[in-house]
Amino acid sequence: MVVVEDLNDPLADYIREHRVPGLMPVGDIRVFPSGVVMPREFTNYVERVKNFTVRPDDVWVISYPKCGTTWTQEMVWLIGNDLDYESAKNKLLLQRFPFLEAVGIISSEQLRGNDDDDWVFNADTISFTEELPSPRFIKSHLPVSLLPDQIWTVKPKMIYVTRNPKDAAVSYYHHHRLWNGYNGSYPIFMQAFLQDKLVYSPFWEHVVEYKKLENEPNLLINSFEEMKKDLKGVVRKTAAFLNKTMTEEQVERLADHLSFGKMKDNSALNGEEMIKEVKQRCGLDPSDPQLSFIRKGQVDSWKEEMSPDIANQFDVWTEKKKKELLANVKN
Image (cartoon, rainbow, N blue to C red; front, side, top):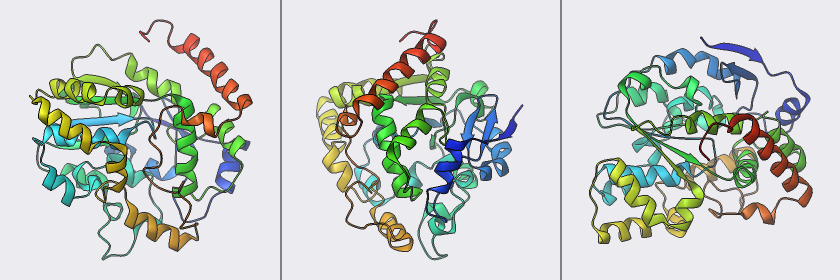
């Protein structure tokens, strides 16, 4: 049963107050049983998400935000579509691999564009996804408890992606600067991350819910760090999970296609035209290199932006959460 409570908290209020009105909404409510933070708009769609019809040949990519989702989506879509690079180049990832619950978190007129804009944000993403032909490739950031009920009986393939929370937090900060127009304090944003006041938080509970399912044959867990260290190995592992055979030459080509430089320059992935329009409409700095959808793609980039004090707080928080949540879960 889904229960909703208002998120009445000084940190959440601060995040709400320090953003550009008209951009993406921030956290207003907690949705139980998981306690995930969501915008109030999501309440209009939660039952449709829960009752979404799942197909056995669906492929889902799920993560907490900023953990390598886009990278994984492109890899999975190409593996699942027999390395059809031409279609991948000519059709936006948002259309090939829709973000299921986006309609419930992107309510802003600024982001929906005009009637003639070819933006998937204009769509009811739940209906858009329902109507796709099989096999469908579906993205979500939802915790286990808010996924469609049929996922647990139909058992489609699911790939969950994890990342060092310090890197995820720094990336989420820049994501908020772009998509929410966040103009508040960096240290306060980090406190909001640590205290689970941001959309899709709590971080560790999100991760652990999926880690508890890692022995399920229809779930594969990859990490951002693993992809950076051995991308070809992750490609092979993911292809095997999806029951696809790839030659070494095909693995090499896909790994090259998935390199950070090519991902960042890929107009089907980087959202640059949409971002340019949003910056113009909302008065954001068009020259700021941090205000991009695919930003750095590095491991341990937190070291460049996180003070020793904040980094230590993340370490203490991680150890505390591991003791509380991971005691009986394989690390």
